Amino acid sequence: MNRDRSYFLLLNIGHFLDHLFTLIFATVAALALHRQWGLGYGDLLAYATPGFFALGLFALPAGWLADKWSRDGMMSVFFIGIGLTSIVTGFAQTPLQIGAGLFVIGMFAAIYHPVGLAIVTMRWRNTGMRIAANGVWGNLGVASAALITGYLIDHGGWRLAYILPGIFSIAMGFAFIWLRWDSITAERSSPNAQPQGRETIEPGAGRKLLIRVSAIVFLTTAVSSIIFQSTSFALPKIFDERLQGLVAQLSLWAEGVAEPGQSDVATTVGILAFVVFAVASMAQLVVGSMLDRFGPRTTFIGAATIQITFFALMPGLTDGLALAVAFGFMLGAFGQIPINDYMIGKMASGAARARIYGVRYVVSFSVLAVTLPLIAFVHDHWGFDTLFRLLAGAALVILVAVVTLPRRLPSPEITRAPAE
Image (tube, rainbow, N blue to C red; front, side, top):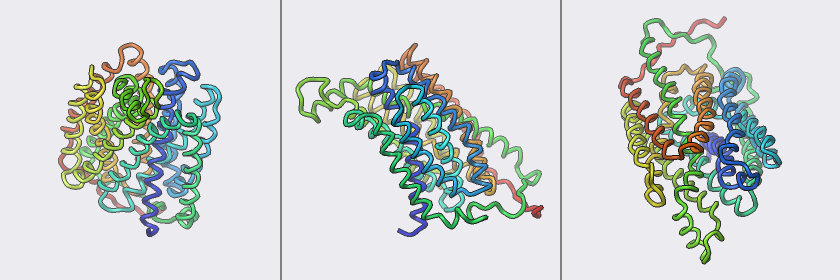
């Protein structure tokens, strides 16, 4: 494997780990800690909320540091920092300690999206497919969080779900440093260096259209984040409640035991969540191809329509039907993820791209943090059926917004002023 492919592989592994670390707690809270620590599911979510605020709060400074210093250097900080913090979190003894660990994990996790995506969209062609492939790796991290954590709850305890990935992340960090050492230590090296001079958008270069499209991007980013967080974080708990009959049958069949309750229920829930996440993540490859061929407007309309349909079907369903419909709405939820990143990559200037992605993820992850109390409140008062109806309404908002997108994205005209 040449160095260029190794570089892209490590960036993809980083995306995998970023989502893995931020969602380990979703399965830990749903299947382990509420029993071990005697706290309700909603109470436990309160300790995860600051971590998602950190994801949003630190995205912009991470992008700024990447543009000013080194994008590859920031990626090295990401791998090693999040790995060390995850190991420490695995030794937490109280809810407050694990909440503090999740906050610091969120700080380091905030680095990946503004920095990694800036590298992906600037270094290679076929932007849609590159973002889609990178997105699939991220979603496999979402899926593996449920699978790995569910397995380790049954075979060693939830603490290993933080410690083992932490060790792996540190190893990947040292591999990344070895591969990109010249770029990290260089004062100005492509793609990390800013151009000599400053970039400006000429008046009259479609500024109004650019502002309108940017507003749509940030609106749909916020609403899409509600959908993604609600589905990815709550799915293990949804399956724990809705697939009890199916889980019991599968667990008993796999273990060959006669009495319910003796089998590895957490592992089975984790496997089902992994399968749904993994299969649904493949939608991003289809979306990436569609973005390069048809553009974001048509692609976004399709993703929003799928979400509306399957969220509206989900209330009241259990077992096999619930699993089938979950596949449907996760296809839409995962499929929409690369679209906004694609649009920003096409419209943002190169020198400030990491900072612009930083702003995008400040919006995205701030909404993610607010969504956790929403999930807890809706679940405690009305159950998940109400949540599905709210998500169908959110997808409708996205559909109305993206219908107003132009068929072709505006591209600002860039002029180069002399360096001061």
